[in-house]
Length: 352
Ligand code: NAI
Ligand code: MG
Image 1 (cartoon, rainbow, N blue to C red):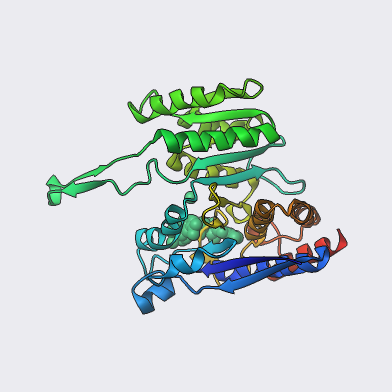
Image 2 (tube, helix red, strand yellow):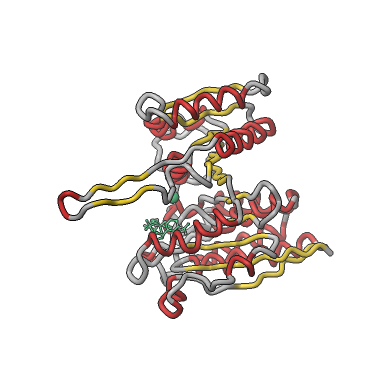
């Protein structure tokens, strides 16, 4: 029996609806596969926890989490009770940084039977490798003066180590996939960091002559995600550019409700964290219409990370079948509830 110890943090809003749904699917996967056990330990860390304790997680929260095989997270954020920058930095970004989850990967692809916002989408299947530890998301900088004299300075950090790490990951992934890497740059406008980014890209690509490379300025790349997503395979991007591109990726798939993501620790010292792209969706909370597919596909990425790719692939096929049958939530044109979609995925998984 192989046992995986997983820390689950449902978080806020629909996180508390889709995480239990995905856990049900994983428990069904145990039975389908045999020889596998997923042990979940739930932590209530969220905006509500903050109201009670004045912090997003206890002082020893990171110590507690570090012994798990993975962290399975829903969504964090309830701006009505805690400002977003506090909830995000104290929990999510805190975990990403301390556990050296330096790579964020987010796939986007077409599904048969799923209508995209694009008028005539060709088949696309891409994955964004986002640098997850530095870049534009930094605490370096400050403010000075008050009122109309106030000045804010925000520094972006680009280290050779961090940039190479993200790019090497992208090339390794492209080697297993479509043999193409696109670099998201903006070296025509950003004077220091992006020409540096381009130089590192050239250096990292040298040992991979069989992989096709190209670079796009981020503005043109964002437009091409909409007009011709089928031309892309692996895209490597800085923290901010990757964040924006992956929301476009989710939108052209059909809904942010189906987009998965993984924060990967590549040195094996700490657990990786798996969380869908979407947030806590306060506008639909409690209505039983949250799409569970983003969280369930995220569970598939966790299975892949464990090396359990057979059951991961079966799970993805179950999701494909359920989308094809149209047993889906309102955001992608269906009438099913969160639990009906989940039950149908479990049914298909048992059939696989
Ligand atoms: P959001 O992703 O929560 O919602 C955007 C829109 O997509 C809403 O109309 C929502 O109803 C819809 N949506 C999202 N997930 C869905 C699902 N599974 N099924 C159906 N529809 C879905 O983004 P928003 O509104 O900007 O942020 C809400 C809160 O979530 C904020 O506090 C924000 O900071 C937080 N957030 C947290 C993230 C995380 O924990 N990783 C990521 C993004 C936002
Ligand atoms: Mg985002």
